[in-house]
Length: 95
Image 1: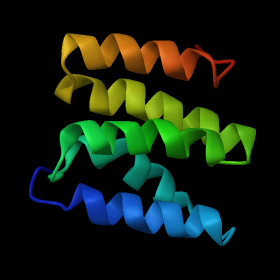
Image 2 (image 1 turned 90 degrees about the vertical axis):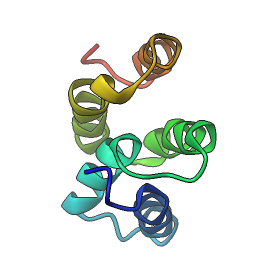
Image 3 (image 1 turned 180 degrees about the vertical axis):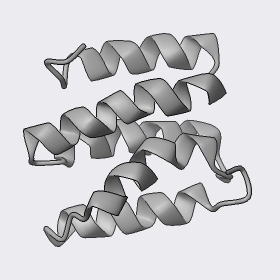
């Protein structure tokens, strides 16, 4: 997973959100971006938090959030984990 380009994955997800071309595979890319290789971890973390609320479909957004919490959680520092949980709690009814 760490061999994959997280920045490119986030660029593609961002482009799809901007053009309203959301695809199911974007859910996985957004959820796993923090497990992938990124140039600047803090920037990638901020991008994920910025992109999640832009997922218009509530069910899709909840799936992304659930995937982030279960998959990316292992690669986060304690500070990132707390911040992520706090931010995502405001975006989802599943938490």
